[in-house]
Image 1 (cartoon, helix red, strand yellow):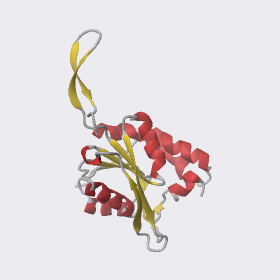
Image 2 (tube, one colour):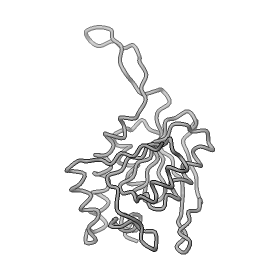
Image 3 (tube, one colour):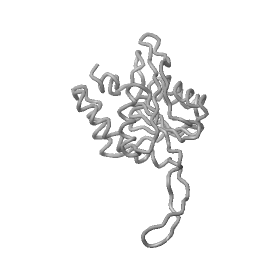
Image 4 (cartoon, helix red, strand yellow):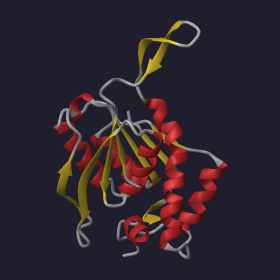
Length: 208
């Protein structure tokens, strides 16, 4: 069963209020999104796998925990996921970075794939999939399907805002993938936008 974690943190709540405000300019939206994702990374990275290695400190030998030699991957759902991916990569510079292009049809609200570029040996990497919004779930499901088709078995999904409809759809398709979000909002509107939401994250990031 899908695990969903809604983060409860006063600073994340504060920054999310800035992101939701329609009067927040694009430059400030981008900056705040990166800061919010960096705060969320602490909980996300709790899911990372480590392995025991022998090291020598200046004082003595010891057993320590380190990431696997084949580092985790951070995969952005284009285009809005890039800000979150950049924030996570700042904290985890060892990560391989991948991009999956998913575009929502304005009339049908269905996702279509148009681009894929993933780190080498992706099947052996623990993978964090990022997208600011989990609305209908179509893009996230298609992206997770793509990762599964490449042999990836260990996936975490990180988003800023989720709708119950998207969570339910993602759960039905990928019940074993944990979802980490800053907010679980009320519902989708007739155009499949999240309410209260924050609008189109990609448009607000890139001022388009």
